[in-house]
Amino acid sequence: MFSMSKATTLDLSSFNTSNVTSMSSMFSMSKATTLDLSSFNTSSVTNMSNMFRSSAATTLDLSSFNTSSVNNMSNMFNSSKATTLDLSSFNTSSVNSMSYMFYRSAAKVGYARTQTDANKFNASSGKPAGLNFVVKP
Image (cartoon, rainbow, N blue to C red; front, side, top):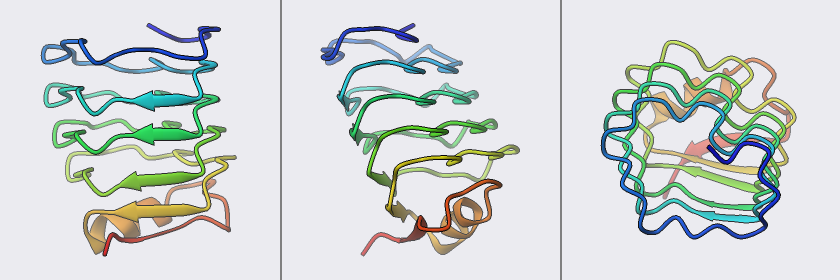
C-alpha cells in the first residue's frame, strides 16, 4: 500500500485495518521517518513478510499489534532504519517463518513479550550480531 512511497509523513490514525489479512510489503522502501501504527487492528493479519523492509522509519509504534494469527514474518525488518524494536506486544506462537526478519536492520535494542519470543527473535537467520532481544522489563 505504501511501498516505495516518497511521503515523509503519513497520518494513519483513521485507518480501519480490522479485516486486513496481509500487510506484506506495506511500508517496504517507504520514506516516512516515523510510523505511528498504534491504531492498527492486526488481529486478522496472517502475513507481515517484508512489511518494513528497507523502510526509512527510525521510530515505529507497534504497541497495539496483535500477531497471534501471523504465520509469516520473514524479512519483516530487513534493512529497516528503526533503531529500537519494541516487539513486546508480539505473540509469535503461530509464526512459521522468521527467516531474515532482522537482516541488515539498524536496530541495536530489541524487546520481546516472553523469553520464548526473545529466543525466536534471537535465532532468526541473518540477525545482526549487535542486536539482542530481551524481555521488556
